[in-house]
Length: 112
Image 1: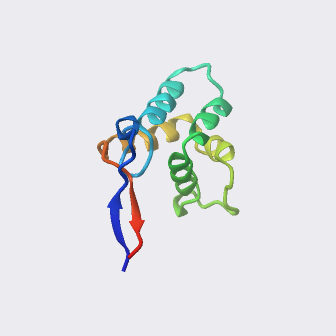
Image 2: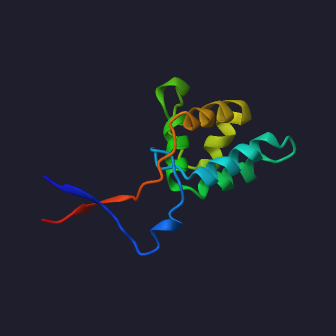
């Protein structure tokens, strides 16, 4: 069984706060601000989401969930954002805010 320990880098004060799901608070805020701008195209919002690996994963998991009943899985963030649309994307991303913020050190497995 693997044990997990906290990474303790020398510059640990520079680790950005993130939600427990791994999404950066900073990227999440930038995406929510972009969604609030009426004239910003979905392509630019997709590019912001693509900058955060955890957020990209969550959006793709959400768009590919059974509730959307897609015939083929969506593989690009850009296509996923386009299929969800602004309102559904904003609603989904707002649920992340209710997870709280985790500013602890990331963890990694230790080898025995």
